[in-house]
Image (cartoon, rainbow, N blue to C red; front, side, top):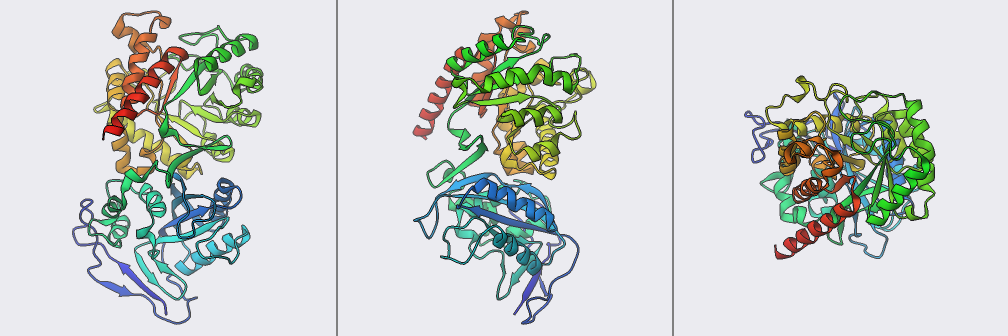
Length: 511
């Protein structure tokens, strides 16, 4: 027997996290033994959970998402990525888990059939219940409907007891309920305080980082648990006109020597840039940028010292990003977050590498214009504009679990704005969380190194004299929640990072 109940919002609508639509009445849309009969209506917003613990788990996710898109499932949001201990049947490999929000015209049983076909085509066959599987796709929510049939129950009946399902599900929401559909999802939970209350009762964020559940970012050939240690990104500028070290490392020999020095100093990531993005910098073509970049990139990747390190390429050109990743770069760092090349986001989606999306208004020639420096609340507005870029990236196929955020210190900012950002990183996270908890959990990168505002504060006109001020800025950023710091002077900043991390660890123990 099929039973479909449509939950309708209350008269008062959506007013906050404590008031949800309560199914003041339900309409039974169909009841029959033939479960091929469907509810046909306009687009429905759905939530689908993903799990994998056989083979290349991340590739399984990517393949499943591609097949879903080709099957009439338009993915709009992604949860974070979690590596989790197996549940129920514990003698099996660890899982990757996540979830997506999507829009589809498929009826609930049509959707179930599509997902089961994807599972079969990817090698899933009958076996032990809760046992190993290359891919597991479950419908958690389907529009505002509560569904019960011989083959489908929505909401999924065991959501409420599974932290590995609840964590990515929560990522798909904002802390502010923004639609009656989301309000109905809250009303369907087993807790009077909705999904938020249920998640807290399971343990909430305190569960993340423990052995049973790690929030991770896939990079190179491993899963990076980035919250455990602040990463240091060393800057390698190949430009003749960068504000701090322009012209010093344009030759391959000098560039390699500098990378060796940064690695010796403790750098985790080397960020290579062949295009200056200082204020008023002239733009060079993608071809010119590649001419500067590729010989150095190839030489750096061949260095034995780089075996356990990561290489990022700083570019806003999609063609440069593509060639760099094909040569072996591990991350793309885009100061424009896709705004200066209309093909960038689609290209990043196809490259399957982490993407650093930075906040900037305009381009380097216009970013410090009076119009671009107007803020009524810089942290709130940076958060809102960054979320807009994340939303566009996700709609282009870049999963949230591959995005790193940078609030863009020194880009479209006055001195007071930069200071507000350095002291307001938690505010930026909380403002993003109103719209997307997944985006609010993304690794946060800051790049205050030797910036002009430090020179203005300390009366240090020469960029090379601003390293002590950089260390102070980095320290403030780390205590505010920064996960990656981008710096010129690696050795001294590594020491500062180690002290900050040690202090944070001690504070967490005391809590």
